[in-house]
Length: 274
Length: 274
Image (cartoon, rainbow over the protein chains, first blue to last red):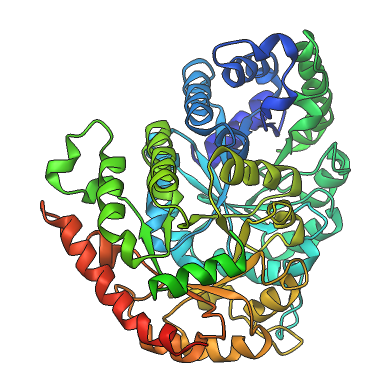
């Protein structure tokens, strides 16, 4: 999916919501646990109930790998289900991969060929070698970690360099030269909205993937105020706040309410764009 | 496996060789490709022929994930095979994971519970949250990326901070406080041996996992000269230089020769230790 198509979906749905499919097997509703493919059954119900409010889904690989080969199979089933039933949906593999070039190629093959994801999250520590293979795919996206929403983002990400800039700023400004706004996004946590305005000064056009709304404390309004650009330029993710808002037989309808609530906060910002 | 047990294995075998199981399906010998489980069949033959020269095996997850659920199943078969047949072997999941705490817990569960790895490689970018869950397991190890062997390690890893130190040095000195020499190792590439001596000044006791010997240009002698400590403190990895040295029906015996060659260069250094 290209930049214009993504923006088109956002306009059409008046939403820039991404639902994080952090499908932790231990938190599944009891009546789902007995299914043959419980993670897939849960994801299918969540997707069916939230698809009208969301432009993207983002499964975090950890939750699938924790279940071994069976978990990975259910991830593949989830991707196939969304592709078949919800055309135009943007699919992000939250994998945070980063490895040397010949290995990065294999990860790119896994997420872009073996599975049909549109985007994958990537860790920048090892530099351009570890990102380049993902950028070779037309219409696919590298979502590079910049300033994350967790507390210990201050350990290294915001370390000040001899040049005076924080490390995450160097990560953004350096990696902007590797690709373009058409194949690169950055992860910037909603827990640090004041930094969004700073980032927009040198990175005005790129999409930012913003986790940390809800359970982690960020709000749609703060993120939109500081981060919105002329093509929206934001995808806000919520995971636990939607998918595990209720853990009874009503989980899917409660997830729909939560997704609707977030997307309704987003709609006015989209209506105001040209 | 604890520090003393690992050093004990190194003394017993007079080797600190790790064989990287970067089992790229496209590079398998032709006669293996037709097997029901070709990656496992290949790994089994490599392990059987190299185990007497190696103290560790390190599968890189990318090569298994590229084959989807079937690849992950064959990784699990490989781990089980080594555990059952070669007790005392140190098993490293080369996964380079790094995610927020609740997600990192899941990865830790995947590598330390679902699969019985001794160690997992971790990316430090997101800070202590992303490492702590791995350190909660007794007898398991976090192998943190410090200065990697790839060319673009200079993009960010060796960026100079306002404090005057390079980022990788801050990564090591900061994360040394999170754990100890008994549960933490660092990845330092053999392609930068001069930095090993520098690292040994502030990190004298920890094990270093050193990739980059062979295909990438580093040598055992340089790494040992700059990196050895009183308990060896080194695990040198070779992947392609061993497992794909030959791609005919003789691949396993040629791999054995290559592993023997490297370990024979290591033996004199171990013999000299008290």
